[in-house]
Structures are given as C-alpha cells and as structure tokens.
Image (tube, rainbow, N blue to C red; front, side, top):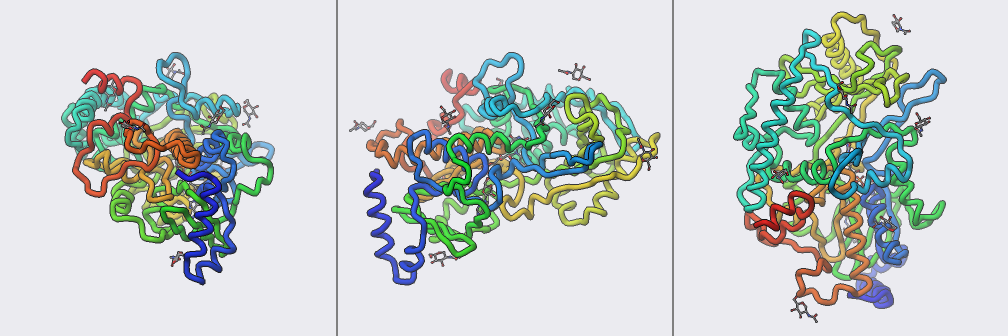
Length: 530
Ligand SMILES: Cc1cc2nc3c(=O)[nH]c(=O)nc-3n(C[C@H](O)[C@H](O)[C@H](O)COP(=O)(O)OP(=O)(O)OC[C@H]3O[C@@H](n4cnc5c(N)ncnc54)[C@H](O)[C@@H]3O)c2cc1C
Ligand SMILES: *[C@@H]1O[C@H](CO)[C@@H](O)[C@H](O)[C@H]1NC(C)=O
Ligand SMILES: *[C@@H]1O[C@H](CO)[C@@H](O)[C@H](O)[C@H]1NC(C)=O
Ligand SMILES: *[C@@H]1O[C@H](CO)[C@@H](O)[C@H](O)[C@H]1NC(C)=O
Ligand SMILES: *[C@@H]1O[C@H](CO)[C@@H](O)[C@H](O)[C@H]1NC(C)=O
Ligand SMILES: *[C@@H]1O[C@H](CO)[C@@H](O)[C@H](O)[C@H]1NC(C)=O
Ligand SMILES: *[C@@H]1O[C@H](CO)[C@@H](O)[C@H](O)[C@H]1NC(C)=O
Ligand SMILES: *[C@@H]1O[C@H](CO)[C@@H](O)[C@H](O)[C@H]1NC(C)=O
C-alpha cells in the first residue's frame, strides 16, 4: 500500500514525531525496507522471496555466527586419521524425500538436497531389531499392528477434518481404531513411542488427532513416505547456506551475524529492532522467524505488548524437545547391518528407546557411532543432569540390550540441551489437542507491520524444515506485494494478499473456507468432493 519513496518519508516522519529520547535512538538506527529476524530456513526463504521480487533492500539479523538456525551440526568423535565427524544436533532427515515413484509434488528440501549434493541415505524403518531389559526380544510384529490401526484412525481424522468437527487427542483417535496399549505392556509402549512420540516429540495424549493425522498425510502421502537421513560432512545446513549464496555476496552487509535482538517495537507504519549491542535497525516491515520457544520464553520483548489474541496463540501451541545423545566406541559391537534398535524399558516409557547406528551400510560405516533419542519429559530430565549421570544411564541400557557383550566405555559422548538454548528454547512445535485452525491462524497472523514465519506457523507442515521454507517464502512474497502496492482490492478475500486473517474472538472452530490451506494431494479431493 506504500511505494518505496513514501515508505522512507513515513519512516522519517514517525521518527520525528517520537519523543526526543527516542529520536536520538532512532537517529542512529540503520534503515532498511524489510528486516528479517533470524537466519534459519524461514529467514533465508523470506529473503530469497524478496530478492525474487526485486526487493533487495533487506537485512537478516541473526543471533548466531552462522546461518541455518535449528539445522545445526557439531564436531563429534574422530575418524582413524583423528579428523572429527560432523553430526547433526537439530534437523537430520529430509522428510518426504522423493525416491522411486510418488504422485505428488516434490518436497522443496529434497530439491535443494539434490541441488547441493548432500550425502544422504534412505532410512529403512524395517531395518529394526527389538529389545527389552533382558536383551533381544522380537516384538517387531506389533509395529505392523499399530500401522494398520493408525490407517483406520487417520481415515476417521479425515472425516473430522472435512466436516469441521470437534478435535480429539490422538490417544482417543488411536483407541477408537483399536490401538489401546496396556499401561504395563512396555513393549507396546515402546512401539507406540517409535510410531508417535519419536515424530511429534509429544505423547498421543498431548497431540491433536486431526492436525497430527493431517500433517502426517501432507508430508508423507503428498511428497512421499521416505525419510532420508543426511550425514553430509559439511552439515545439513549447507543447503541453507547454499540457497543464501544465490542472493547474498561474500561478506554481504545485509547479513548481520552475532546480532542478538532484545526488543522489537512495531507500529502500523514500521518496525524498530533493538540489538543487545545497543544498535538498532528501522524497517518498513519485519518478519519475525523466532521459534515458538523463543516467543514463549519472552526471550525478546515486544512493544507494545503483543495483543491478547496473539499471546494466547503463542501460549497455546507446544514446543517439543527432541534430544539425540551421541556415543562413539572403539568398535561396533552392535549388529552392523541394522539401522535401528528399539528398547522397551521395564518401568519408564520413553527411557532411551530408539537407537540409531551410523555404522550401518550407507551411513558412516567406519565411525562406530550410535545415538539414542529421547523427547519431552525424558529430554527435560536429562537436560537437568550432568553428562556423567546421563552416560551412566545410557551405558546401563546398552549393557542390558547386549548382555552377551563386554561393552567398553565410549570414547566420545555428547548431547545438546535444546530447551535451554537461548536462540531456540526447544526443538520444534506440535499441535495440541482440541486446538482449532483459527487459533493457528492467530499464531500466523501479522500484527501491524510485524509478520511471523517459521516452522510453527505452517498449518500443513509444522515441525518440519519444509514448513519453515514455505512459511518464509509466503511472508516474503506477501510483503513484496504490499511494498509493490499489489494488494489494492483488500475486500476481495479470494486474493491472498494484505494483512493476514486473525480472530479477535475465538469461536472454537474455523469457517470451512479457512481449511483450503489443506488443499493438495488426497486431502484436497476430500474437500472438492464435499
Ligand atoms: C533436534 C531437532 C530435530 C529435528 N529434526 C527434523 C528433521 O529430521 N526433519 C525436518 O524436516 N525438521 C526437523 N527439525 C525441525 C527443523 O529443524 C525446523 O523446523 C526448522 O529448522 C525451523 O526453521 P525456522 O527458520 O522456522 O526456525 P529457526 O531455525 O529456529 O530460525 C530462527 C532463527 O532465529 C534466530 N534467533 C532466535 N532468537 C534470536 C534473537 N534474539 N536475535 C536474533 N536472532 C535470533 C535463531 O538463532 C535462528 O537462527 C528438527 C529440529 C530439531 C531441533
Ligand atoms: C526464487 O527463485 C528461484 C529461481 O526461480 C527459485 O529456485 C527459488 O525457489 C525462489 N525462492 C523462493 C523463496 O521462492
Ligand atoms: C529394509 O530392511 C529390511 C530388513 O532388513 C530388508 O528386508 C529390506 O530389503 C530393506 N529395504 C531397503 C529398501 O533397503
Ligand atoms: C489421510 O490420507 C488418507 C489416505 O488418503 C485418508 O484416508 C485420510 O482421510 C487422510 N486423513 C487426514 C486427516 O487427512
Ligand atoms: C559424500 O560421500 C562420498 C562417498 O561416500 C564421500 O567420498 C564424500 O567425502 C562425502 N562428502 C561429504 C561432504 O560428506
Ligand atoms: C523497547 O523499546 C521501546 C522503544 O525504545 C521502549 O519504550 C521499551 O521500554 C523497550 N522495552 C524493553 C523491554 O527494553
Ligand atoms: C576396545 O576397547 C576395549 C576395552 O579397552 C578392548 O578390550 C577392545 O579390544 C578394544 N577394541 C578394539 C577393536 O580395539
Ligand atoms: C474487489 O473485490 C470484490 C470482491 O471480490 C469485488 O466485488 C469488487 O468488484 C472488486 N473491486 C475492484 C475494484 O476490482
């Protein structure tokens, strides 16, 4: 609605109108048209979308010393030449990688993985052995049982979605389809953890039935059911840096790394971003890509305070924690040809349940690296304890799984603490039960000139890297249209342009038309046939 020239005039005017103290502050602010808060997948996609629309006056303001955000890796252990391995602390798979035949569109992350030649390998979830506290115990057939019942549950969720009916917990949906693990059947509990918690970072009780099943479909039915594990030694975020290099020069001043944002002031004419070092950036628009965890922890303050409807949405959605614990040994004492090992603890559900071997063929066969994943309460518990305490627990489990082996102590041991990481405060978001689409639209809506984008703002792909990409792209495109004055007819609701829809008052369900965001693949035929 504003031309570029007018924008600058307005920015100056709002500056002059402010109190003298603020004027002094603002006088020193760097000016830009669009400020992108955060340099993860969403931030880079937003910047690229602006660039694609010939808007090159933007800055990316990033806390860390690198792009990539939650696609983050570190050195771990060493190879036979003493060179460390690269392991991923955050995102690890291309979820919905197109291999073989798939009818739907291609996942953009898969397109990038090919473009940037990332080393990756198909995760074969049938390559699994099952264990309990007495060693190997074959209960793998329960995995098929779950999957059959899940398919039935998902069909039911499809009906609830299509008819805009009351959501349930995934627990309820699974039970109605016949999956009802006994509380003391720890093998069934381990199977359920592998099938549900491992993906959502929350239990079925804590997850939406409708949106959990819809999300599963939109990634794994629409793109493909393949998950490809990235083990590239440049790190998974090589593709994010690669995409950024298509529009940023080397040492581009528009990329502000090591820049901690503390305070964001927004109005209907612009946004001012204050950094910890005392400097500031003044922009016509801003895209906030902070994780839901950063927003929930008030790690950055907003002035004025975000409106009640926005704060409600921020507090309503869940930020999960998914923790990978890495171990390197001097030898591979576990089966070499198997990718996964599932452990059922006799007392605690989710206690070091899923083990993943990097020594398996197609990964890093000489590495002797294995890692185990925990989520949610178990992840919080180990974040509170020392490495030594956790190592002792992990080694006890491994020795129980392989009682016939004489297992040496690991030569390297490491795990990240995502919940207390100040630029993430968790791993990825989850959709809680009985939480409507209109609540989600409030999470996604802009507040004046402040826009929101990221994994969590994707109704279709929340939790996934491709969700962050689509959301960054959309915010960038929308802001470009506003800057180019292409959103003239705001009364035409079929034009997806201008301010995003939000609900000041929540109604408990959304108008059916809002559900068009789920269009695509088989889910869309559901709507068009109704
Ligand atoms: C352990 C783990 C496993 C995962 N596994 C997968 C997987 O296998 N497949 C998959 O598809 N997805 C996975 N994900 C999810 C995926 O990583 C995210 O969906 C995606 O990276 C989110 O991108 P984003 O741009 O929305 O947010 P982010 O990557 O969080 O980007 C936001 C940026 O904002 C910056 N920031 C935060 N606070 C400030 C501040 N105060 N000042 C300045 N900058 C700030 C951050 O440093 C960050 O770079 C996983 C995530 C984790 C953590
Ligand atoms: C920008 O354009 C390029 C080239 O067409 C395309 O590959 C890329 O996906 C676009 N980026 C976004 C964020 O839309
Ligand atoms: C996956 O593993 C199973 C069990 O080892 C094996 O039978 C199957 O051929 C593997 N599939 C692929 C695609 O490698
Ligand atoms: C998921 O896809 C299946 C298969 O197409 C369909 O039967 C089901 O209704 C879908 N569920 C949801 C929640 O979209
Ligand atoms: C990718 O895999 C090939 C084949 O194993 C290997 O030679 C190369 O070093 C790997 N590159 C990276 C960056 O991981
Ligand atoms: C944020 O900045 C505004 C404008 O400079 C100021 O009024 C407000 O007090 C600041 N808030 C915090 C928490 O620093
Ligand atoms: C690994 O270390 C253990 C304990 O020190 C030792 O017994 C074993 O022989 C070592 N294995 C190899 C392959 O060196
Ligand atoms: C704007 O959109 C509305 C609703 O679609 C339509 O009735 C009206 O004619 C449009 N106005 C213009 C100027 O295009």
